[in-house]
Amino acid sequence: MTGAAEVPREASVDVIQRELTAFARRARAAAARVHPELPLVSYTLLAHIEEQRGCRATDLAAHYLLDKSTVSRQVASLEKLGLVERRPAPDDHRVQVLHPTEAGAKLLASAQASRLAAYQERLQDWSADDLARFADYLLRYNSTSTADFPEPPAR
Image 1 (cartoon, rainbow, N blue to C red):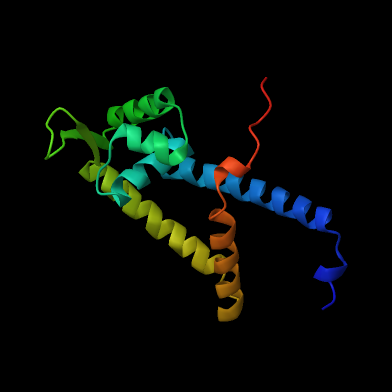
Image 2 (image 1 turned 135 degrees about the horizontal axis):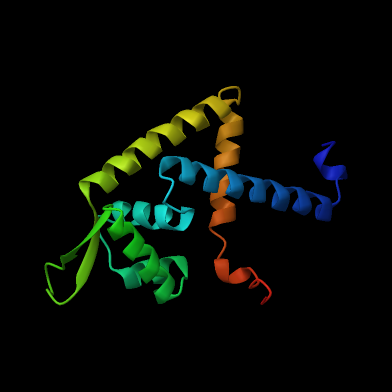
C-alpha cells in the first residue's frame, strides 16, 4: 500500500485533529442557521431529549459529562425558546422529565432533513464501499471513551 503507509503517524493525527476541528466549526455554524439563538450544545441536548423520548436534566449531564449547572442553563434557554417543556414522570410525580414541545420537534425534524440533504450532496460521489468504511471509522472513533481525552488547560 502506498500513500498512507508512507505518512508518519503524527502527521496523520495532525490532519485528523485539524479536519475534526473544521467539522465541529461547521456543525456550530449549521446549528446557528437552524435557530440563531440556539447554540450547538443546546441543539445537541434537544436532540438527545427527543431521541430518548424524554429524559431528566441529570441524565443529560451524565450522558454528556457536563456540569449540572451548565445543563440547567441550557435547558432554561430551551424552555424560554419554547422548545422544551417539563412534565412529571409517570412513576414519580416529584421528578420532572424534559420533552420537546411541538415547536422543538418541528425544529429538529427540519434540521435533520436539511442536514441529511447536505450530507447526501457532499457524499454523492463516494462509493458505497467508501461510505461504509467512513461510517465504520466514525463508529470506531466515537466509541472511544471521552475519559481518554485530556482536560483542556485552565485559563
